Length: 250
Image (tube, rainbow, N blue to C red; front, side):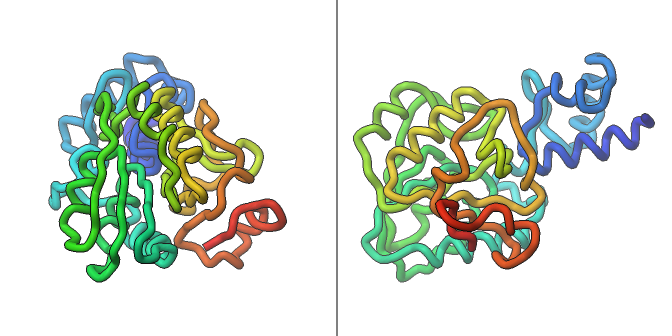
C-alpha cells in the first residue's frame, strides 16, 4: 500500500474515532510498527493530527476551542445536537460526557433553558457556563489527556451517588451485535457509571460509526433509551437498531 493511501486511512480513522492506537493501525494496514510510527510523525509534522503516547488523536478533539482546526462532520454533528436538545426540559438534571458532538450540543443550547448540567469534561463545562440560566457541576478526577475527560475511582464514586434525568454520551463504536464499545479501559468504566447514574441515556453518534466495533464493551444497545444521529430514523441504516426493547431513534 502506498504511503498516501495509508495516510488517508489513518486520517479517516482518527477523524471518525477521535483517537487511535498504533497497534490497531498496524494490524489494520498490515505494516510494521516502524512504518506506522513514521506515518504518524509525518502527519503530526503536517499539523493534521496530534501524536500521543501509543497512537494519535484528532487535534480538534484535543483542542476544541481552536477555531483554526476543522471539526470532522460538523454539519452532521450540529443536526445531532439540535435533536438532542429537543429532549431537554426546564429544571432537568442532565449528565454529559465530552467530545466534539457534545461540544456542539453545549454551544447550541437555547439561552432560555433553565437546567443543571453535570459533566466529566472540563472543556464542556466551560462552554456550558456561558449560558446564563444553566448551573454547571463538574465531576473531577484524573484528567485523561487523550480524551479531555476526568476518569478514575473518584469520578465513579461521585457518579454512584447521583441519579440524573438524562445522560448523553458519545461512542467510538456502535453495532447491534456488540453494542457500544471503546478502546480505553478507564473511559469505558466512567461511561458505564454515567449510564447507571441516569434515568435515561442517549447516545449521540454520526452515522459513519454504525457497525464499527472497538475492543471494550460499554453497554448493550438495549441498555440505551435513545440513539441520536444525523439520519432520518426511518432510513435503512437504522432499521436494525429500533424496535421492541430497543432505543428510540431520533
